[in-house]
Length: 293
Image (cartoon, rainbow, N blue to C red; front, side):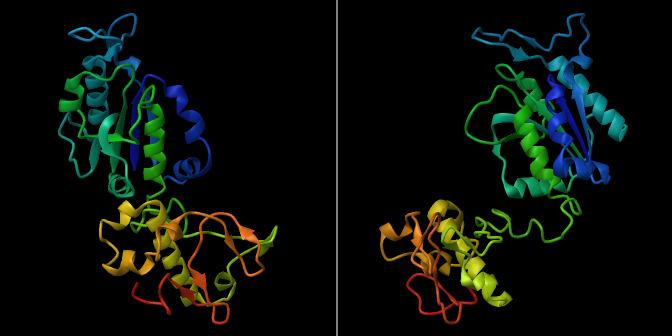
């Protein structure tokens, strides 16, 4: 995959692109990321990229000429043509607060592209002709405004690159993460088994992979119900997903400490009950485990 970023602050990208997964992905040839200075596509001595808005108002607006020149140069370099790149292989994304929300599904879609061009706005925004004539889509990372599009661009790059096959090594590495299946991820534990009186759930140490899978599924559903019920409302997990985990009272859904087998407080999310004898996980209001839930 090829990613081109157009920005007036290219120096912001080197630290993030030069470490961890993004660095390894580039070294392995899974992705090639190039950052381009928008000022290199200006034609005046001052390398001007912005101007006052028509109609008045505070701030400056990014001019269309440099952005058009940059995108057309990148398209010609990568595809040999201007403004005719196949959208199924190449997309031009403008980072903007009024864009569509960045989701796991969108990142997955973009990770399948051969070429991704990311445009970083700044100041009071960009000339509307850039939105309407250059960008295939606008993407936002949240309902808030940042100084520029550089940080959102880095978020998008990280989100997309880790979904490229082979980048994380194991093929199942992203399959059970939060949002990958429409749910928040289940709780994770590592050694030691007991820390300051807080125990790792027995089922995770039982060696019973089937029961571990059931426990994780129920935990993911319960955590999603408590923290992000809107995800369950999309009805992608079957009609029993919410009802199976609905506690008898509103108080039961509160995130509060719970007591482990030794009676010690364990901070964080209160999981469904665990049958200590058979290590079977029991959802609220249920006497057994539903393998289809």
